[in-house]
Length: 456
View 1: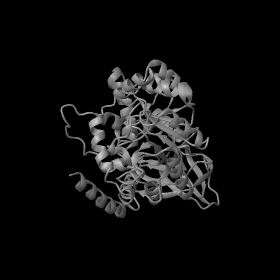
View 2: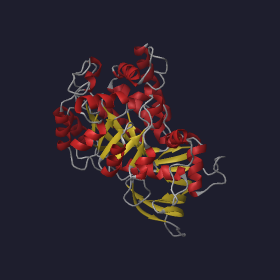
View 3: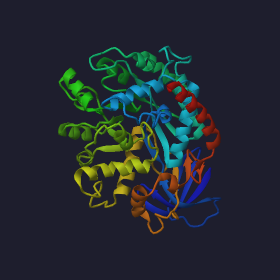
View 4: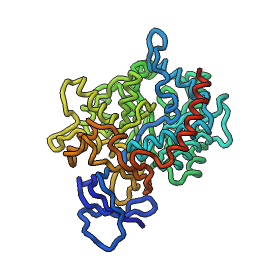
């Protein structure tokens, strides 16, 4: 049993000072604000303690590909031309490369203040489409990377079967992703058996990649408490194709045909009708928004304010990892609305006038729901994840409480402001650097050189 004395901390009930936090086996047992001296052996933690942020949407292998598709592809570059290039990168992966790439990414996430990640994992097989032995070898690489770095993992093996609505057969460059439901369940079972500390759920790649009968079978087969994630309505072409196939929009179809509730996370959900906004907010599901990736790919803007006004929940993710910084994701979530509506301080209310604080709290709550874990809170029963902010950072010298969160989100970068990070009860980042960064970076460099030589 360990005792931490936090100088200042953001608790579920608000800001507090001199907070005694008791830990055991990586879990918070008790939290006591306004602690006075006692005979307990305490570890004093100076600075401002925030609950660790949850990265609700990650494709780890794309970290090695980030920035490689920034040249014009044809007469009209788009999400779809980017996807073709990304598939070429995915075709080169081995379990060893994926482990090295994921470890680098997860170390970067931790240094930026992400202490848990939802890994949307669809590169399952060998390059020729044949299963590895074991079938979960690629998933095991991700599990090993999470264990190596200390990040909390929600692993989401992806069901992927078709290349388009109406059961179109998969393309040759998608064959590494393809499983029937039984094969995917074997991967899920192997992952659960090998990683008891990880949360394992289910991802449905998208409605275009998962036929209705397979979606129904997969959802029925997994544990009723397991998180379920799905890409949906990211691109206008996807919406148009769904309407042509079913006479319904993607989110409309999903809400009609599946029991969407609080264990579901819809990733992107960019293009919604007013009726879909209303129904989605009422469903209890979370929407995982990835503003830097959505901007990079030209996806469009999620209707954030109407959705929040109706009580919808949000989380943030770094998706393709063109940025690995929760502050930047939150900043651009608000900035995109400001640019569209030509107003400021939009994600606020009379009760909460601070947009940075409101965004941080909403992303913590939605991220915990997306992860399906007790994370994102300095509270009894939660995983012991802390992000210690340097109060002596130049931008934060005169700020405290929610005003400090405003300044943190809108005027700093995570790498500058994050002093230390605890993940699962262990200090893994000190002075902005992961404890195993040197060895992780060496392995990553080798993997990236191999990948980029293959793509040349």
